[in-house]
Length: 440
Image (cartoon, rainbow, N blue to C red; front, side, top):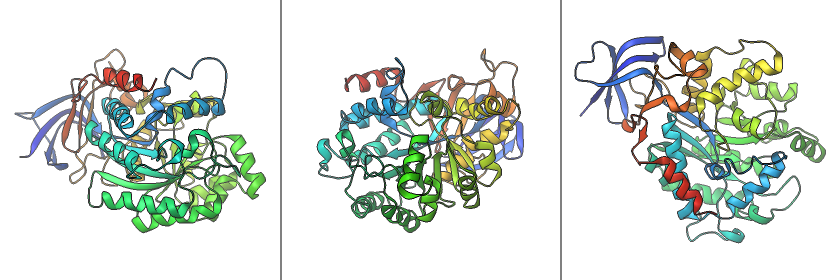
């Protein structure tokens, strides 16, 4: 039976409209009109399309608040991350990820791109099913009500020219051929299941030697699936890459066929002019994760320049220092202001598009992130009478005023998963506490 929602305000492709009726049939939007609410389910405030979190490491959520003491940098943070990675198994990861994805749902996220590299058991020994950890993440997303692009990540070396060590051995498959064999089996397990996209990822030039990259790119081509990679997040990474390969990370990926309209470069913080041209000319997506990049003191990437050169920008919460795509969106603009000492680099509608339609497309769901007939039925409603949003309207309300706490209703793939600010799973805070408590 179709279900109709009445939106007090809705952000449609043609702009902000009032009194909008959205008819949902199954998982899709069937019809959009304007009119009186009648017997429709009422959604007060501003309704926008579902948000896409284009870059997530679910287990990093256990580090929030635990890595903020004392001084340090990305590399000291990474040591603490490895400790958490060493403690997880499929059951505990499923529990943690379910809670993390439910937290995302509360923030209006309806699809997550999970950059997944925690593949194997302690000591690098595969589970009976080598994809047990991947299955756990997909189960978790479904339990929380999200679609998922599981970006199965190739991770072969501990650094440029160094072997895996410690917890890293759980990430590795030995070589790209064995990685592809495992990833192909995962893709086959979810063939035809429309709420799951199995994509690929090259962790970084630190973790995948250039001669192994073409097999990962070939997986993306063969399956017509997304291909993501961490790119130039750290200056030290760039220096090691240039010293070893006489090329920047972007140049290495370009030479090995890993850039293009299905590819996403995550972070892209420290780029040369040549890098920017290669990313733009190849139409590679750029995933900015500002709250993580500032938390790890990574730096500020040239988001506007990349966008203007032809590289579409998306957003991710990455390490989950914060799960709030409104904060990620406005941080893109505010970072540009800090770097340039000028305002107004991005229109609010552009940033909202990065968080919605562009993000979904980068994850293999090009028919999501927009309120149009035929699209996935994702409706995120934001209150306009909180102390943060009172007196605001339109995309500016969500990008420059709202926080995740202002999301009061979420319909994902036609299913109501958040109502009155509460997730269908129950107390998400308690779920997080219990899941993380089991790891300590």
